Image (cartoon, rainbow, N blue to C red; front, side, top):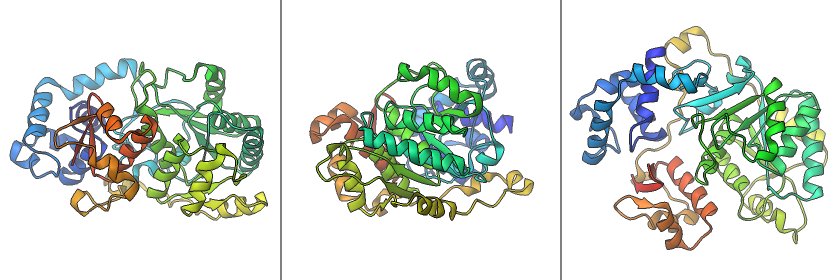
Length: 383
């Protein structure tokens, strides 16, 4: 297991190799240690590996000793899982792009990681109204007292309200960072993060020392959605990271619930959009919400045989061939803005004339669909 962990780390360091490519390599070779030893002819069988990518892979492999890399990495990152580890969160593993590395701090609950304890994501705007904060606290308190684990992103606003309400009710909460697990962002939530560590968990796919970056937070949102059995959007404007989380949750097959609000309330225009697209409205009687969420069955436990046979067989299997993928109409302008050669993020933003956050969310959705790949330097290429 240690050896395979080293190879997940090593592959994740190679230019042009992201979560989707790692999944293809694992599925083809069985484990990544065998893929590391594969020759050019074998690697060219993997969809998305052309001559340029192959050259980068070979250059990287010649410069990395996986076992030595792991030992050096553990000095600053002592606690992380890879999909080869049985402790890796099972629901996240079943998504189309599980992080190669998932760093953690806090208290680990094995039953929770195996999907035996229900996790509900609570997300929303960084600038909530009193209405949004009130209902976030009320709903989180109810869910916490009935045994649900609350996940969110420790952002200002609804995220912080959800974590705080869960802790106040004596529950367990999970915060997913868009930074390293050792860097709290925003700083105003430092005390909250310390409180979470007492009985909860902090997760991140980014190594220790990683500072806040705009592109990291849409990626963070896919982890929040992937960990959870359902996502509740409490309050969100039309341009919001919460909408990214909700859209990804839909792609992952998760239930999405929305807090209703007035038609003239701009803070909830994103929620109204989700309702128009088919999201469920949080019922007026909260007992009904509890009954719906409580009806989601726990996952069957994995026995030792399943783990020994490599739990990576739990990966979902979305279409990997972009020519067979139906690009949603709202994503087409962003998709078409990517040139045949790798294209800078800023160039895509300028081409479509949309807010950078909206473009980042669309690119993440395209990546999850297998249509594009993010490259180092915030560049994107069409698969």
